[in-house]
Image (cartoon, rainbow, N blue to C red; front, side, top):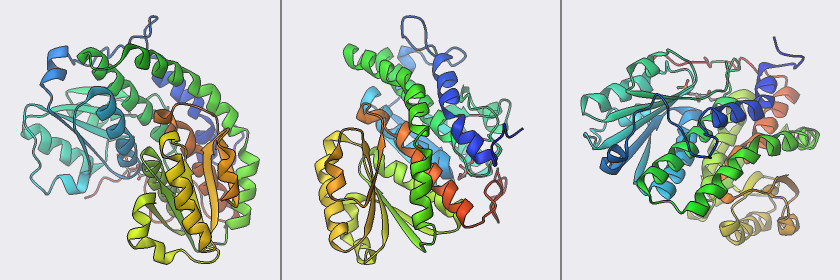
Length: 365
Ligand code: F6R
């Protein structure tokens, strides 16, 4: 059942090209328009939404951070992302003109379900992004956008995250296109980028051995930092969570520009920092952040797009992802971080598929 892989997590990491292909093609028409069949969202509905809330927990919340960037950019609607257990207790501004998006792999996370019920009570339209068909979140939503990741067994979420990202891009594109606020050429280019992702990911997975080497070198570290700007900061949170949950290493993610406001005090000789620098328009800014931490003697693993080799001067190691448009890099850049967490956990002898004290779905508050 593990298809020859030693762990479900590794199998699921390798299933991501397929999951992304499925999630995309089920929503794409021949003429590259997006079909949201089974989801009722008219032009009028979209025009009436004056706010979007994305609410989720853990990895699904991290997918929401990227979703915010996508929907705001493409559909021009303000988006708030919230952690389900926080949203519930703060009397959020939700009404009939709010689109509430719950993201959940299992569809059974109690905090997410309770937040959904609260938004529903206040009159919001409820759309959920769910992997498990017929789950509680799916049943209680007005509409469901399914991720086609297939069953996810490992406690650490991998393919659910990337397919959730795909749903968010498609939703943003659909809303922007229907509303008429997205540039035609940009739309066409974006769809082409999404179509190219499964193959690029397959290519990227071939660099697994390099990541294994990096993991071997650093597996005894007691703490690891992840930094990035823009969508790279969202991916940093996800990379950090993966590492914590399966390898039990203390890890911390922070928006790179925020480092200098305090956290940089923790960066010293030999501290390990993953610096995500995949955004072309933020690349120079990231290089100066990397320089700052390098000056303190840190080991820097840079993550950048192929071709941006300038990063090599500042980094101890560099992991390249295939070239693609800035917006979609999270679909690729998260994968080396998943692999790093996997191999570090393996070298430390951890129980990868079933980390201690964690359950696959959290049905308590
Ligand atoms: C991390 C992880 C958790 C879940 C979170 C939400 O790898 O698996 O952080 O993402 O518990 O679960 P779902 O998506 O089932 O609501």
